[in-house]
Length: 273
Image (cartoon, rainbow, N blue to C red; front, top):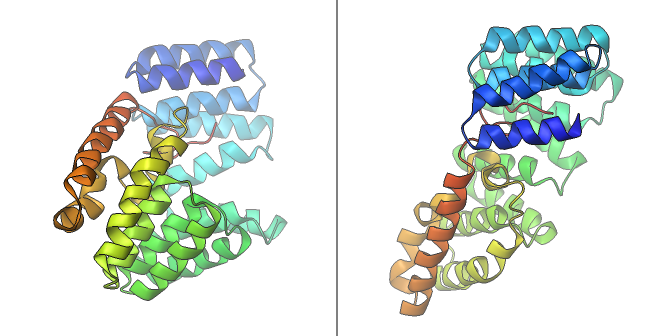
């Protein structure tokens, strides 16, 4: 099963959803009562745009194992994507009833409220999730972005500093910290040029290629266009050597983004396998 998941994921990254689905269907046929195999079928179908097929596969997985969390999460995410917010809320409420410290359920609840146009509720859930899991990059970046969008730039900077202290080698975290510092009017030379240099010299070495763009896009950050985040504002303050390094780094990350442009499990429906 693990091999089938890996192969399906690889085929989706290569843009071959037909073969990926064939692998998933053969796996579920060989393991008809395995909820993980059915969940894989749902994830592939959902990413390919077949939401009805995905819903059916997730439901079948839960029939075989009502406690199978991955399928329950994917079904709730599908509910949210289709505007069935109350159904998604009920799922996450049940997860929290079983474990009141379930940070994943809190984070997913925040995403539902963002989709539903309730930013204050989304912020409340993100802060609760962050309190439970302060080293989680996905949660931290989502909180930083939410605070920035709400106009709380000092709060976004405080969260970015806290996350950076825990995950100093993560490129997306460094980019978020740079943006937060720029937004509050910090010194461009101190918080920009020096940090950008650190990003390019250190950050790129910490991006795990097996995760590809999934790790680069947490919280909606498009780090493969990092120039849009910090480059334009800092270019005049950087030395020619740093500008040249910026261009080379952008090219490497753009190539990585293209190579993994079909990563699906963290995007579109955010399916969990």
